[in-house]
Structures are given as structure tokens and as C-alpha cells.
Image 1: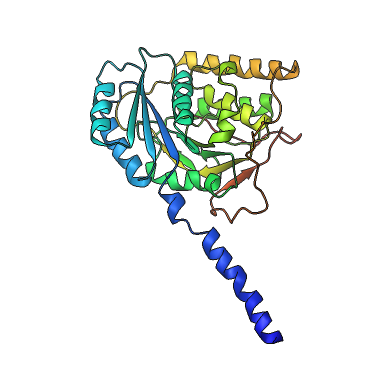
Image 2: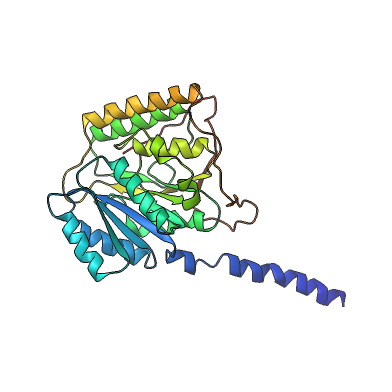
Length: 310
């Protein structure tokens, strides 16, 4: 009798583990919306959409086009007509990357997304990384996952020394001034828990350009979001020209200082109001090996480690 009971207690945990860690369903991307802003990406849009949906076949892909003069929006419409998983959001003119993302986020949240992913259309972000990016959120282990070039296992290729210096310097500056923990603050390959994203007041976002990435991570971190980093290899765009400019660098410096000033004056919001969606900590299954925790709140007093940006 005692032996039978011992055998029974040994087998129960195994059965439970097999159910809770089965990755097949999350890997398909059900409930995930992939938001891809475009401006003059006619040479990339067909191939990148196909690769995204191959990686997450059950996901919804939302193209947000800022009136591309090269016909990107028209091509996206053709793709959407042929595949119900593809949606297109047309905007009348180029208004900045941040505004395009916020517009797309609103559409995704209104469409019932449970996970919202943001990524570039120019192949800088590898679509095969998508299952690993959404995995920690599906496993209830994170609220925001950053595809990080500068966590162990990540990297950058095809960049010149000037771009690397700007990227590193910008991230170090932002981490120091804003006292943030994530190593890759300017990267744009991220996955959000929908409830976390919805709790950030979009109308209070300063940034319209690339510094938007810093501001969103800052606001999520200050609100208590669980942030993790997954290593990625970032490659310079395959086709077309980079949209990085001196104006973007100046904007980043100004917005970072403004955010810190607002925080000191008490104008930055507090903890996220989760609206009945609790943070699940103890029951989460094991996360992938290449996922790195980022503690919430300000960085340690001994200063930030070297970070990188995009």
C-alpha cells in the first residue's frame, strides 16, 4: 500500500510537466499580432510577410504603411486580398516610426490580440526568432520581451564603426540618465503582453521617431512590467537605405532628458493597473535557456553596463 502511494506521487509531477510545457500551440502564434510599419519597402514586403507567417502561421500580420510613394501599400493590399491573416493600415503620410507603431498597436489591441510584436520590414529582424520572442509571454514569464543585440548570444553584423559608436553611445546615455536595466534600449524587435501595452497611455508618448523605443521600455519598466531579453543577431537592411539621421540622434538626447525631468517632477505614472489580469509568477513553466531577466526599476548604483542601440 505504501509502495503504491509512493509510485503514484512520483508519476503525477511528470504528467503535469508534460502538459504545461508543451510548446506546440504557443509556437504557432495564435492570438499574436505582428505590427510591421513600412515606408518605401516595396522590395521587401512580399518576402518578409511570407517569412513572418511561415514562422508564426496562426498569427495576424498588420502592415502599417505611411503612404509609401514606391507602392508598398498597394502591394500589401494585394497580399491581404490573397491571405486573410494579413491586414493593412494605410496612413496618409510619413509621421514617424513611433506614431506608426502606436497606430498599429491600437488596431491590434482593438482586434483582440493577446501578444503584440513589433518588428522591421527590412530583414534587420530575423522572423525565425519570433517563436523565441513570444515564448516568455506565452509562458507567463514576462510582460515585455526585447530582442537584444547586446545580451550574451546577441550581436550586430554589417554595421560600420560610426553606426556602432552612435548605437552604443545612445544606449549608454539612456541607461545612465533613465537608470534602466535592459541592455538594448533602442532595438525595435519586441513582444508585448497585450494588457501591459494597453495600460501605457499612448497620448502621453513624446517620441515620434526611433527614440520611441527607449520611451516605451522606460514607461513599461517604471510601471513594473517584467522585462526579459532574448538574444538576436541584427543585420543591416538587405535592400534600400537606412532611415537613421542626425535629427534622430538629437531627438533621442532631448527626449531622454525630458523623460528624466518629467520623472523627477512626478509626471511619470506609477505601477500598471492590470485590470484583472494578474502577474503570474510562481506557476510559470521553465523559460528558454536564451532568455535573460531584467530586474524592474532603476539600475544599480554602481552604474550601467555597456549597452547597444540601433
